Amino acid sequence: MQQTASELAVLLNGRVVGNPEVRVRRLAKIESAGPGSVSFLSNPEYERFIYSTEASIVIVAETFEPSQDLPQDLTLLRVEDPYRAFARLLEAYDAILKRQEGIHPTAVVDEEATLGEGCFVGPGVVVERGAVVGDRVELHAHVHVGRDVRIDQDTVLHSGVRVLDRCVIGRRCTLQAGTIVGSDGFGFAPKEDGTYAKVPQTGNVVIEDNCDVGAMTTIDRATLGSTVLKNGCKLDNLIQVAHNVVIGEATVIAAQTGIAGSTTIGSRCMIGGQVGIGGHLTVANGSRIAAKSGVSASLIQEGQTYQGNPAVPVKQFQKFQIALRRLARMPLSERLEAIEEALQTKEAERGL
Image (cartoon, rainbow, N blue to C red):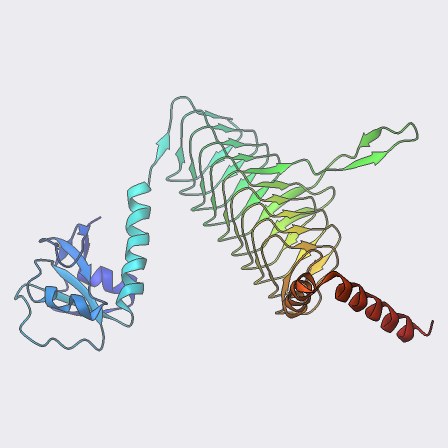
């Protein structure tokens, strides 16, 4: 990394106060930064360090007013939010550190496959016939890219990822180690003799732009059509996405969740860990499902929070839990009377 203050100002949407041509090569904490470093000041408790820092550039808030003289060679980069700006800079720096290019001699790339410019193809990678890999894609060790797969630019596949035939991955996606995209869906038809016939899974998986998929997650290809992760989805480790599932934009799903076939999950949903979602269901936009819940019926109200097995609106679940605890504290005779009274009330409501 080597950038001028003016280049950083463009990246961070900031304003330079000082020398716009001063260059920095590293990131550092404000209390220990040296020449050629860029740091930031967000917490007022660290303000004292800016008056003695040796950093070349310090990112500060637009509202920052020094209470004493600053070092003569210090350049300030004024931004709206220094903490967020420095986080953006860390992200860019991390990408630079990880950036690799070239094709390892042990990689096998079919002559009918296409690699874009600036790609990295690591040891033991296989890219099969008809695959199209976009610019600056990274395929780390032992990645397998199947026939006629398309992977768009700036996507990273970590070690051991498998993207099987005809699947599509968009731009700026990251698939963590061991993820499998495009394995056959769980499709079997019962036969008269009690055995099962396999139903061919002829579709694919489409992962749109800006998606992140955790380690050892499996996303099955569709029976017909596509299993789809829409733009900005974030999936944790060890998730099972079955055939023909559609997951809406910016939905986040935690580890060990399982989603059965042909279910549609809306946009901006938040799904906790170890949630089970049945097949052929709909989960409305903005739904929040608490960890360990079981969804056995469609959730049709947008923006609601659900919990329990079967999942119900969270207030209903909490009332049930409170009633259950009260019941557990009752003497046995009172419990039986309460149950009998409840049954009588139900029978009266039904007109029995």
